[in-house]
Length: 409
Image (tube, rainbow, N blue to C red; front, side, top):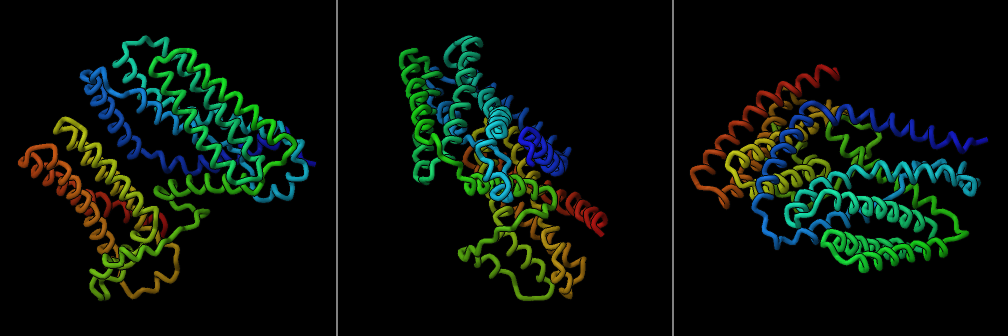
């Protein structure tokens, strides 16, 4: 007999153990130091920008769009598994305490992102409007209640068998969330805010009545839980090997010309393999593209030369550090060891490929620098970037991968 009261507790303990296994690899000293510097630098320049922000700056719509998107992206983490279709489906009506705990867990575990965005938006709001901190407290309470409303709405849609209901619900909630956040931060009349709140409550009552007596879509719940864990495993796989992760490989024929540039020879065996892996595996190409775009945008908007140099070096380091997992990508495939290629040639191919990727990123950052700083400063930062890339690849990364080989050998 299944003990419903203990079921959630057991699932939660198992979930925390699974997450903590990988968090100790993800939250390593290097990443924490990089995030500390990035956060500190970002806070400094953000505070500097706020000193001269114009009063007519469209702060309300920007904050509303950011918070509205986060509020809309709300999903109850039920921690259900595939076997539950057999063991829990027959007793669905008795699982109310289980799903109530899942709701509260989801609410408190998703508040952290709201706190981060709210902490970033608060100084902007105070700088432009000259409001007091007490007004922010009242707004944040409404934001938290909106988060609970979004979670309840998404949970109710899990009882509706029509797939169109899911998309309609998302669109309606997104619009209402953005409108409510805009009214709150633009100091609108309490009458308009009250109208939106009444509309949200009415929508909640309507959905509650519409799905009354309907069962859960267990297949959808299981699929959503699988996707959520898959996303976490993909992030964790950037730091360590994740056996449960199923690789997603895409052909991307429009990038075949890159491998076509590699000459056919024995010494280029692993060079071709690493290049093809990088281009076809979303984890590597997507990561490289995202870090390049984010780094480029920050370099463009940071006003000081030292700040631009710091961001450039920081993102070159982050990219190189994350791509070091490419070295171990094929280590557990037995047929790769059959290649008649020495370990020295394999290491040389990897380091050269990593070096070229970081040089390309450095060049892209330099092009962005040309748009904002003097030519002489740009050349100086480009040279500094190249020196850093060389030392990172052929000193730091080389020693790191050799240490990894000794650990796994």
